[in-house]
Amino acid sequence: MLKSLMRLLEGLVMVFCDRCTELLLEDKLDTVTASKLKLLTTDLQCKVADECLQLHGGWGYMWEYPVCRAFADSRVQRIYGGSNEIMKLIISRELMK
Image 1: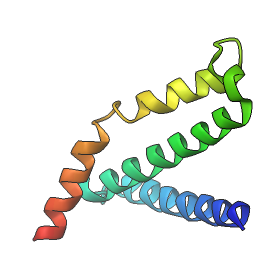
Image 2 (image 1 turned 90 degrees about the horizontal axis):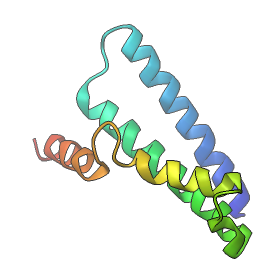
Image 3 (image 1 turned 90 degrees about the vertical axis):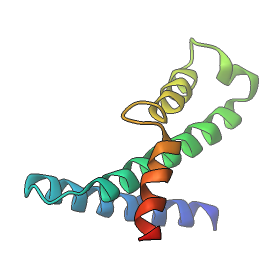
């Protein structure tokens, strides 16, 4: 069940990402939609990396394994391009209008 939900979520994120790319190419992508995409994708990346790290147990924290580097990369993605907390503020301001 969890595997099918993850596949569904992956598909939804891919469709949303493709739509945002189309909007960007048409110069119609607004800040709120970009913030939603960044928040969604970085959170999903962190969840997947965390699950992979849990599968490796203590070995997952060793830099020699790609899963450790992927976990570190996923954590820093929450900061690059604006922290996820800022993205939440941008989205919530739009919802309050």
